[in-house]
Amino acid sequence: MASTPRPFALAPPPAIFQQRRVDVLLSLQQAAQQIASILELDELLDTIVHRIAVDFGCIESSILLVDGDEFHLAAVHGCTQSNKGERWPVTEGLSAQVVATGKSYYAPDVTQELLYRACEPHTRSEVIIPLTVRDQIIGVFGASHHDVDAFPRAQIEILKALAGHIAVAVDNAQRFQDERRQMQRLHEEQDEARRIQENLLPRTAPSLPGFQLEAECVPAGAVGGDWYDYIPLSDGRVAILLADVSGKGMPAALLMSAVRAIVRFLAPLTSGPGEMLSRLNQMLLNDFPTDHYVTM
Image 1: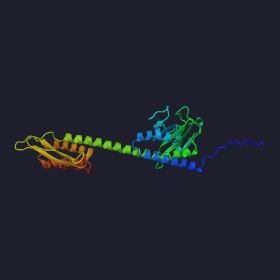
Image 2: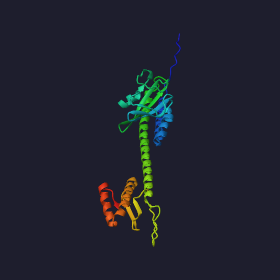
Image 3: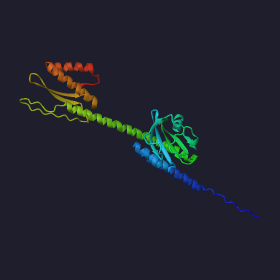
Image 4: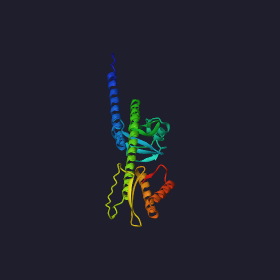
């Protein structure tokens, strides 16, 4: 009696495997390009966890950035038990092991992991990959799934490659953010220095018989070191000062303020410009750094 042949599965042709590999590499290239094009840190992190991670098969994903001795949950998707912005010690969770060793960690069944920090009650598998820039771990990228052992080796390798692009993009975005903050502080300092300078200049010119006085100070940059003043003297005369303080910005504004106060104190007490300038010079030499000077 002839036996009935049993059905068997046909393996996909090599061309199909090759096409899948090409598709994955193209997706990785597109993801890298998208990541590299974003310089706003929050936008970058949210894009990674909400779109790119999902495209690579991550049901849940998160990015933890190392901030001193704490983890900062900078972005999260698919997790209801942790919120963006939360912090906890770098010694807690599986992420702590990754930061300590510098190596990725795959937990095919999180119920067997003593260090696992739950994000979703139905999570069963999780992979955590360090984000490394210039041999320094700046954070970790975590991806998890509701199924046990849901991440095959090939997918983990893809996520590792993606994490390399994420780390560089995050570092660039952080640098951009730091530079923007520094520029903001510089602009604020310049604005304050300009206000100080404007308040030091006379509001009006004195009225002198036979003279018409007009003056205006327009700095070449945001804040200059030029300064002028009118100082009434006891005998009815008026001392007119023109000065240029070395430097720019807040240091120049503060030096200008100090010189103005000293000059207004000395002018009524001295016999003339020569004595006043001599005493002013001595006081500045005693109290100010030698790399700062005033031309008057």
